[in-house]
Image (cartoon, rainbow, N blue to C red; front, side, top):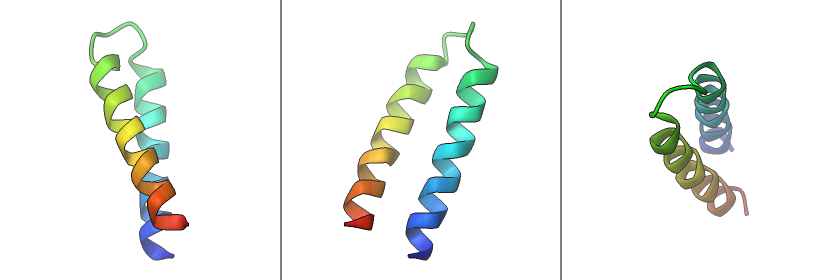
Length: 46
């Protein structure tokens, strides 16, 4: 359970960072990271 909470926190930070950097080219890498973490979270929480 703690791992899931940690992943959710990281994903939340990434999403917040993504929103703060909408105009920057880093969005692509942040999207990829967030997608990867979201899939890890799904595996962890099932």
